[in-house]
Image 1 (cartoon, rainbow, N blue to C red):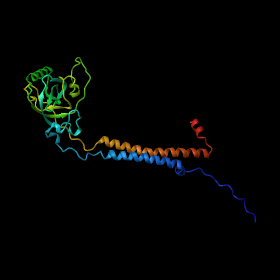
Image 2 (cartoon, rainbow, N blue to C red; image 1 turned 180 degrees about the horizontal axis):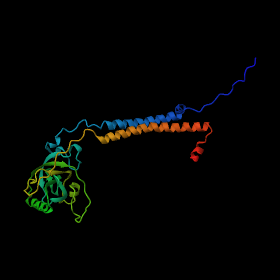
Image 3 (cartoon, rainbow, N blue to C red; image 1 turned 90 degrees about the horizontal axis):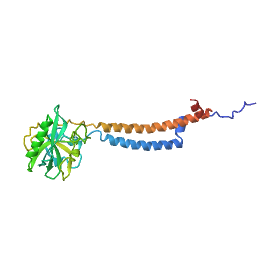
Image 4 (tube, one colour; image 1 turned 90 degrees about the vertical axis):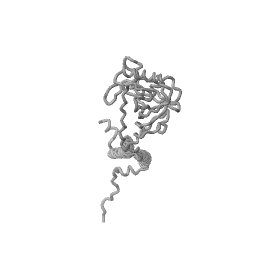
Length: 279
């Protein structure tokens, strides 16, 4: 009995994508991606823990008058929850440090502020916006009147703490014009303050400022709006870390797939470099 020809050859197939991904090289690459993703996941969790403010300031807390020392220390930046906080402070005015701040708005009216330097009982300097004037002439006259009436007696000033507006480069015809309420900038024109300086400034609730009626109007300084309990910036950062983590896995998949496609092309006798050159 004669048997047919024996089949000695075995048909070969190119590797599958799964087989390529399970090779030690790509499993090692996957391990690195997992470590990177774990770091991104930790950063994601850290950001998410700060998205919602679990200890917000009570509603109306800024309207309670507090001693300034309970809110702010000279030289420090004012913390977000205390911006707009009503405080009281005692000290003495410096007669030579009343200045006019231009380009101020008071309930929609354009005008000027008269600001002075209050030296607190602890020897620190606090910039105080005393009152509002509609014209430059009125503001200059008020500043002169306040300077004349100043005594070394201690006065009590109540107002709202506002963050430094930041200094501004001189502009216009007057290089000495002050357009920003900035203690950092006012420090350069004050009469030799010897102690530390508060970075924030105070808007006085009393245009008399414990000195005399200089014809100034009260500065409109409403309570700050309640902040949202959600920190949208932290939420945005959390989404970024999630995207970075997902991208690390996509990068591993894309590199493994490129290696698999190259092996398939070589198996079928296609030169990948030639294909790229033709394109």
